[in-house]
Amino acid sequence: MAHKIPNFINVRDYQKDAISSWYNNNGKGLLEMATGTGKTITALSLSANLTKTVGKLAIIVVTPFTQLSLQWVEECRNFNLLPIKAFENKNKWSPKMEQYIDAYNENLLENICIVTTNATFSQKTFQSLLANLKNPALLIIDEAHYFGAKNLSKSLPEHINFRLALTATPERWMDEEGSERLLNYFGNKVVYKFGLDQAIKEGFLTRYYYYPHLVELTPDEAESYVELTLKIRKLSHQAKVDKEKKEIMNRLAIKRARIIYSAHNKMNVLRGIIEKNINIKKSLFYCGDGKVQSDVNIEVRQLDGVMSLLRNEFNIEAKRFTSSEPNKTRSKILTDFEKGEIDALVAIKCLDEGIDVPSTQTAYLISSTSNPKEFIQRRGRVLRKHKDKHHAIIHDFIVLPPNPYDFYEKEDEMFNIERAQLGKELQRFAEFSNLAINGPEADNVIWKVKQKYNLLDM
Image 1 (cartoon, rainbow, N blue to C red):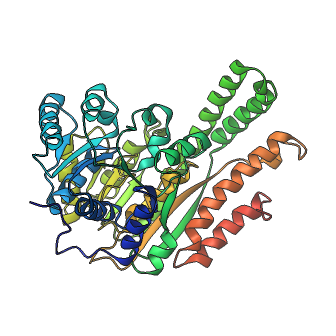
Image 2 (cartoon, rainbow, N blue to C red; image 1 turned 30 degrees about the vertical axis):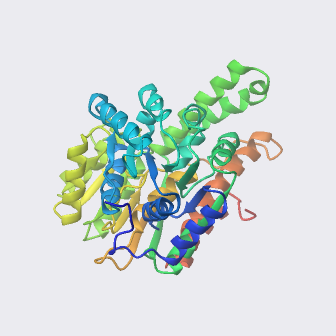
Image 3 (tube, rainbow, N blue to C red; image 1 turned 90 degrees about the vertical axis):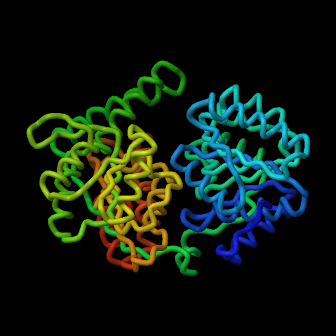
């Protein structure tokens, strides 16, 4: 069977433009496309066209997670490819991969396709087999921002002539070197952009309502936050010249950030939202790794606290969706969620990258970091089109830290750093509200925060 675009898939004009731009950059490039705009279809349509052009093609697809790799396997089959699932048990996939590569190199096969994960791709076994592959070959890296990391970037093969990177967030957060490494490998260029605003405007993604909810720290949390802040301030000048002091300061900053991620009152705010909402079906709840105080004053993981609240207090059929569940279990959970047999999924990070849950109606962002990649991915999960969905709803939990005006002098360098950090957080909220159906209403909440923290100039 020839690798080709199936009749039931209509390649959209913007996807055709993305493919043309990649060709014009000598078969290398990065596609910056919003989550939910069909990066997989674009990539496989590109590879089908490339097969026609060059006569034969080996395709290597790399994704960050097994669940996402399994989705790629299914999509590849639609394009008349028979992919090897090169992840999990090495004894099963490595002999088959070796045979496929040998057959391709001897011109016995016109197309081979290997789908793997970041972890397997970087292993010695996979790398040694890949080194034997002859061109023409196409490397497709999905959620490519991971490969800006120093260790992963070392596994990118120089001998493969065609290279395609896919991501909604090509710039790595606080890592200019990593972002540059990524671009360098993929032809020094983002060859095509298709942003969220354009995707919503043109009807490829669902419009949404955005509801930011302000969360106050408890007195004890606020006291700990201020105490850590003052310690960080004390170390800040020494940390510039003393590596050990810098490491101590970073540990204190992480400890302080956890206070925000795990703020106890998030559970109270969530309880209030659910009490006002009759329908919780088709909901995603994003939690953090931290712990919260339960109602009986026992520390539990935030995820477990949310699960308990949904199931025990509100009798909501909720399932956890984390990396701890086996692949088969996760696949069944997604199927049951799609059928409506499960009302809610409670996740940490496992749903961030590319996993399709298009029927999702509502997302609760209980914990998000300042990393733009995270909130862009999470917003994208709920904006995918679905026949039963007219709009989406996003509830965003905004924890208010103590005001830096309360414990810093305005001339203090750390005061400006803290103020700038708050400003960055507000940029995230503003981006959410700018594209929302109820933008002015959401902006009003953000304006109140700016007013409280004297950030009206940001």
